[in-house]
Image (cartoon, rainbow, N blue to C red; front, side, top):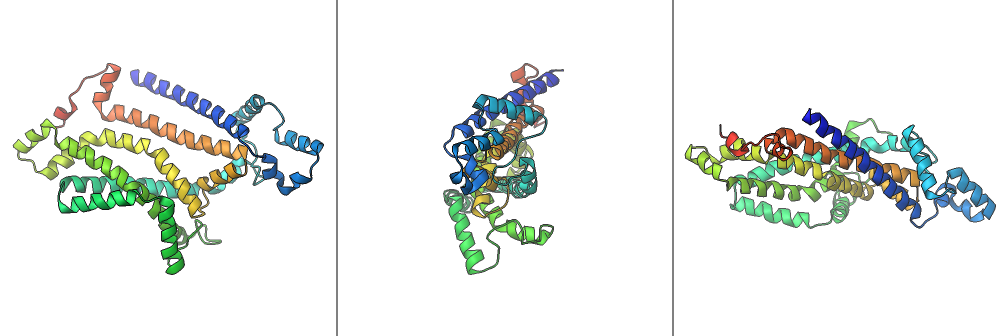
Length: 335
């Protein structure tokens, strides 16, 4: 029963947060400088007289007060209607439906590979703490994490696309090859490399530090007395104890990696949600910008709340905060 109430509270919080964010984004977009008519009608706006401009604004629903525009938009959104894109002259959902899979592929692969490699590197560095290989990895990691991702992207394009001609520099696939798996993989190599390199060491360092700190705990001495090797202690006990923290790191990293994905998409002209975000902001495509922001917000908020729910299941110590149980997890792992 407590779990149902807890999840119910999270659902209510989720709805309220998304609602408030939608209001903020809607008002910020409407109050920002720029002319959305230029996005929809192009240079033809310059030839319009005052009456024609008023008629055009009424057609796009921009003549009413901002609060009324939001109420109208929210009412339509409840019924699955999010308006049309001023730039593409199509329903917002239609435009997004053509490219969202590309972002899922790039961002999803980058997310999984980043945390898989970070976990493996973090364990490796912990097992070889303060040895030469650990110091080399740490130094190289610090250097690579300080290099801006857009600069790395330009260097990779210059070397592998322009000079060597080995890999494509833009797009998600070759012209007319959307179903060609090899073409998609080929176009993913450079953006995926930049995405991983720009985040890998940050999370590796966090995992390494948590494992190193866990090794300093008192229960590890008992493990050593029992004759367990360092590998066994790290893999069987320390890794298990940092698992809730690891999941939390994965959840709170969603906006970090998602933002990195958007930047990489723009640099490589990769047709995804990130490219649409830049274009909608540039051309004042209000409807498109609002929906893209809401999609991003929903992903981020949902990931963070999901991490809290999962942590409460994995780590019994967190239940103590809700007055359910008090469990010495470190001792439990030794039984």
